[in-house]
Length: 223
Image 1 (cartoon, helix red, strand yellow):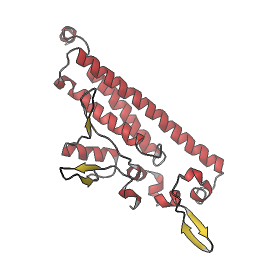
Image 2 (spheres, helix red, strand yellow; image 1 turned 60 degrees about the vertical axis):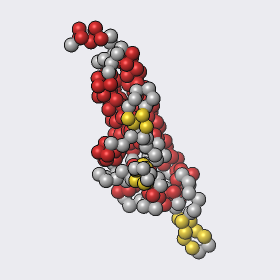
Image 3 (tube, helix red, strand yellow; image 1 turned 90 degrees about the horizontal axis):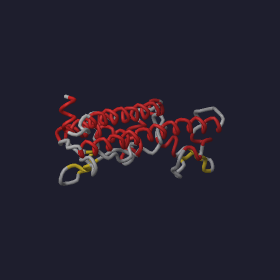
Image 4 (spheres, one colour; image 1 turned 45 degrees about the horizontal axis):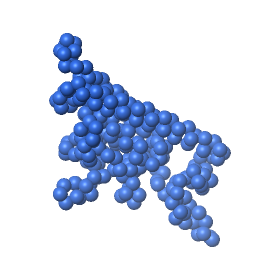
């Protein structure tokens, strides 16, 4: 909880800018999203589409809470500040850094595999996460292109409302993982699920916008 005061998602509520954690429904990505939807919050308006979008801060605590290390009772300090010897005293290492820079004390106290194997496992997780991030970004750009095309064809705000809601959902999910600093490692399956939803919502938004991307005469003919 000490680390979770800062390495979290948050926003500044009301005119008084009260620091608020969106945990009223729980710690999961979709539970924070539900809270933001309930209170009508947006961090910014997208310049291209006009969508009311959310900006994730750095939700390490939330993603970690959905992973195997949290379920096993492993805290932030166990990995990022592992124990060391100072003479005859056992103390936490106050050089806070990536466990990958200190595999022996940060990882191998629990994982009794060779260091190369541990590093390779982490690399696979983070590389897959990176590739999903790229797919999500590509899908959202395609959605934005479709919105611009629909606007050029004369689509109204009402017609594009569904596509922009899909953008809000897709962009929140992509940014939730992109802004979280473990590149998916804190909870690999959760991160993959979130990014998979980002791609899905972006493609649904693209299709919703493309319904109105043809000239109005053709739209009437299609109907």
